[in-house]
Amino acid sequence: MRILVTGGTGFIGSHTAAELLNAGYDVVIADNLCNSSPEVIDRIQDVTGKRPVFYEADIRDRAAMERIFRENEIGAVIHFAGLKAVGESVQIPLTYYENNIAGTVTLCQVMEQAGCHVFVFSSSATVYGMTNPVPFREDMPTSATNPYGWTKRMLEQILTDETVAHPEWSVVLLRYFNPIGAHPSGLLGENPNGIPNNLFPYIAKVATGALPRLNVFGNDYDTPDGTGVRDYIHVVDLAKGHLMALEYAFNHKGAEAINLGTGKGTSVLELVHAFEKASSVSIPYVIAPRRAGDIATCYADTEKAAKLLNWHAQFGVDDMCRDGWNYMVKREGK
Ligand code: NAD
Ligand code: UD1
Image 1 (cartoon, rainbow, N blue to C red):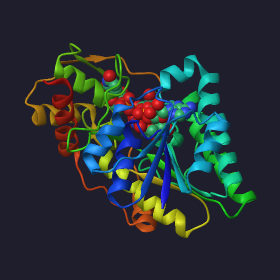
Image 2 (image 1 turned 60 degrees about the horizontal axis):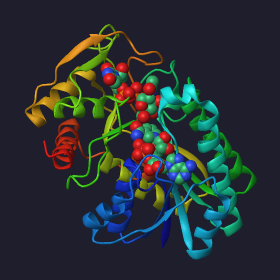
Image 3 (image 1 turned 120 degrees about the horizontal axis):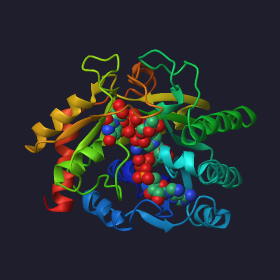
Image 4 (image 1 turned 30 degrees about the vertical axis):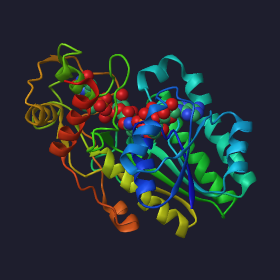
């Protein structure tokens, strides 16, 4: 069975491509490389001993998508391709709506034409918005607070509408919590250019000396130590969740939203200390004002993933920090 992985040279897509290859699937990757490098294909081969087929292609390019479906018998699509920086989405909303929404619509139209109806989509816990109580459950009301979040919220609606109109479709909307860490080999991981927006890559860059200190965004939240609490999930656990979601999608019809998280909350300072333990490097930090749009606490209700997918996260934050640091050491030679 041949699976198209859009965004497959990116952080989560590359780990998922590796898990798919290890599980015996053939993998075709389509990525326009706007936020990743073609060397990732070599790294996936190093990790799995198998080489995915690679197309440097944009999901908005209908002719390119048609060519991929013409040249490959695609059994299902796992769709990671998208822009994901919250702050940037506020600055350039039309770019986000065009890339994420128009791109996904084009991809689905080409799938429809090709008779491929199995789709696993990268959604986000951001769709739970600012007012739901934790733990977040899939049947809670969804909303968004920024254009990035709206692209996820709107695509969940668009994909659900498609399954209603065309019952042969099977769509799994995976709501990721906070994916961090790296492949234990140290060959795949996340290393954003410039100053990272997200906590884990920021801590990692402080640890390598690329950044002087961490700004902790607020220590007056209603949480045990006052800093924000999130549900960090190892990227390898997340990748494995996609395989289980794919199996589920092959055997069901309609659209189903499913959380992929650990169900455990970790504060900013707890993550800093776990990273210090894993790296033996001290992470200087200062308390800074709260970041606009942040909530105090976010973690998943994991019952639905357990019940429908038989999936549970295996790794804890110490593993995530160990593997994330190992990746940085290998990559940066630190
Ligand atoms: P990433 O940026 O590392 O990977 C996304 C990949 O998509 C990149 O390789 C990029 O080059 C590619 N891409 C972007 N637009 C494209 C287009 N128009 N055509 C083809 N390729 C395109 O991001 P990631 O962290 O691996 O995230 C993957 C998906 O998961 C995204 O949709 C993201 O919104 C979603 N998600 C990520 C997180 C997270 O914390 N990383 C959380 C929730 C949801
Ligand atoms: C952010 C996005 C979310 C997106 C997710 C994955 C916002 C408001 N939310 O989630 O929509 O799905 O990334 O891309 O941007 N923190 C610091 N200092 C830093 C960075 C972060 O203290 O330099 C704190 C934050 O206040 C938060 C925690 O660390 O409490 C996690 O932040 P981050 O890694 O950015 O993830 P989210 O905000 O959960």
